[in-house]
Image: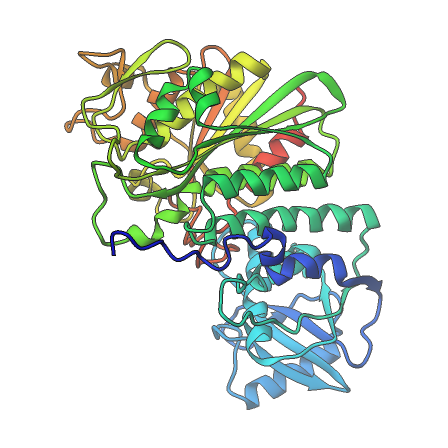
Length: 511
């Protein structure tokens, strides 16, 4: 077998746009409309507050008389609002799907999206619907419910032998809710950016390697008339990104530094987003155990979120220029990989002793942070990465950790996350941790000693060494980027977590 040529993956040369989830194109093809009444032939999603009985309709488009009739029929069917499965009833030619609103005390935005996700499960399994209607329901807005529904309709089927398709509604109606065309387009572009991020996370690593990542980014940028620069192995070395390059020493696939530039209203100013894009993380010499290693394609979720935000921001005119940097590479074990004990040089001149080759994401980000500061002089940098397994011990999979060198900026980004329905929790960068990243033989070491248990904070403390006085915030999404269990998020595969927060921070930055 040693002399045989490796069989080419049949999708390797397939245009990435042909593999986009069907829901991405659906947002462009569906006809959106508004109405004050619900016509026959329409399927209506009806959020119901959970109580001991059926509950209470909070749907603005359903009359109390209609709901009273539905309540009687639901009781006859033995259904109540605490049921995990929605119930569909047909009255006078209109189908009503009753969906219980989660009792989890989360934001209305997250609760609305969860209603939509639950409704989508029903539609994917049981219905062919021509027209679907969403209504405001108390604090739950029609579009947020629709947003969850659209996320629930996401399905990456292009890599199957026979790609299946869903019968998604051709018409989407907002009843008793009115959105301008610009608002609808804005929401749909955000959804598409999130779908793109989820696709990048879900795609197999023998298709979505660093070279394909760069190809997708460049193609997307061209479509949106954005500037995209891609640096390969030689340029990475030429720019003195030795820590980044050290991760790529175990792979023959060319690492890529991807830079997408979005012009803002004030082109004299700039902000920066930086994403870790490990297309597969085997751990290098410190190879990972077999359990869970198949999920290590998700180690690019930070870079995927940056690309999704770039897609959204590329349709806008942010207050300042936005530079999106992604470090795309895989961490493998080959003939000449980095070894524990190696010392590498970074762009800012500091040296790093590599004590664990599986703490590779911070090596990539360290150089990208300094590169961003040197080349673009941003007013702030947000980096986002699936950096540490330790964050799951702290926050599980229902929120992301953040750390910052500027409290006012941290408050601004956390507010952006809250308004976007992406839960963030700040961890402290206490000065006692600074000494724990110092090395006896180099300036820094990439992991702390075994007595230091604050793994997530140590990742942030390490990265802080590369930002100087620039406003900076680090987002660790190792618990939320994949298999997220937060209310209002898809629980399987890539979640797209971070796209909204990054986009919101860039669009609302005043400096």
